[in-house]
Length: 252
Image (tube, rainbow, N blue to C red; front, side, top):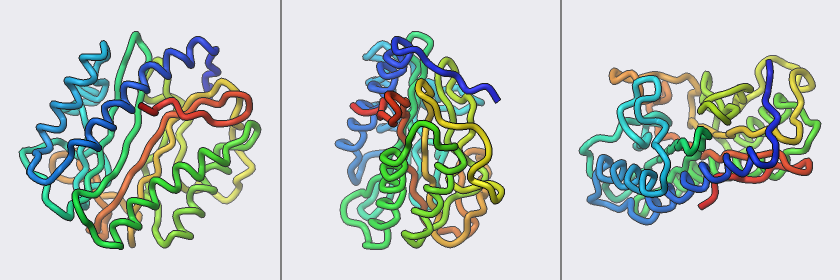
């Protein structure tokens, strides 16, 4: 497995692509309200991305039809925007990718529409808190498997479970690069596998289920739900390892 080590000027190019992702997500955070359709929000984000000189990298990627993954309620990831109008009490996830001058950006948020239940608040908080806990604890020299175990333990301690068979990933000149970073420990030895090094850039994206970690892909071949049929959540940032620590690139 060859994990790229980026030069400082390459990291700045990745930061530029990711800053547009962060801006588009912030735009959706502010505008996603009851009555808005998922397609309207998708179009708003695409216009924002293109107005900043970038391309929505998810559009056409593996055949995905839109700029934004809009994952509603039981859909955890990869939701296709529809004419559905958001309602009070919904939980919606937005996942956005960009490409700027040959470099890629990627991040995601999950948010409530109006007032949601305390259970849904905890569900959303789990993905966000897991992400930031992981970022704060990354150190040069730790193994990716240790990072996966750290996220899994945090999720389990919060009373939830990580979605299986989907993972975080490297990013750079392609939207998905080595390594794959599951949100759970694969195998039993966290001290095995590649180490995190300065110059590595990757996406962490906790995907949270409530009772069953088994994924089911719906008939449209995109929407991913849990076998338990319950709501999920998803948060993601692109980070770079600089001076031994993780720095978030995907902020507005």
